[in-house]
Amino acid sequence: MAKSKNHTGHNQSYKNHRNGIKRTRRPKKMSMSGMNCKFVRNQAYAKKGMKCSPEEKEERLKAQKEAQKKMEEKKATEKAQRLKELEEMKEAEKLKAANKQAKKDAQAAAKK
Image 1: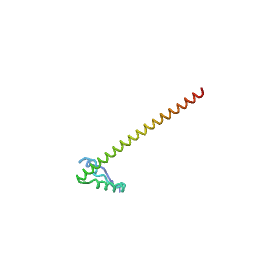
Image 2: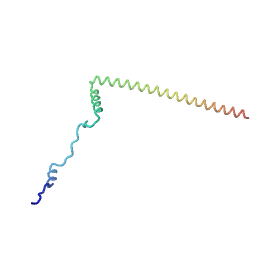
Image 3: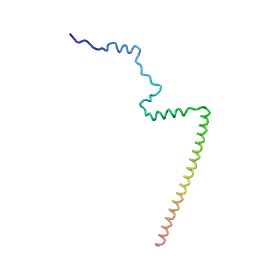
Image 4: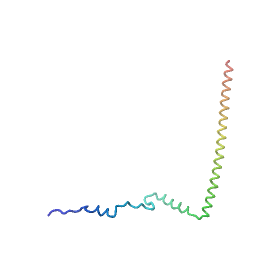
């Protein structure tokens, strides 16, 4: 007895294309499986901490603006101090150069 045919792809592509071959739907939420569990847990706590009432939100914004002001003032004072230090260093270098030149002149005068 001859072997019988086990499989055929006849008509399958026709049937597949009757309703059209569609792309898979993208998930609305990214899967957390396989992610670092420590990160996932921390992210959940952070999201929970972000939830607040409008009054609380206003309070947080006010505190944030105050902190920003303080930081800007601190930056400005640090910048002014740094400029002052640079100016002092330039003065010191000028004095050093002048002293060096004076010594050279004195040595040259002593040789003559």
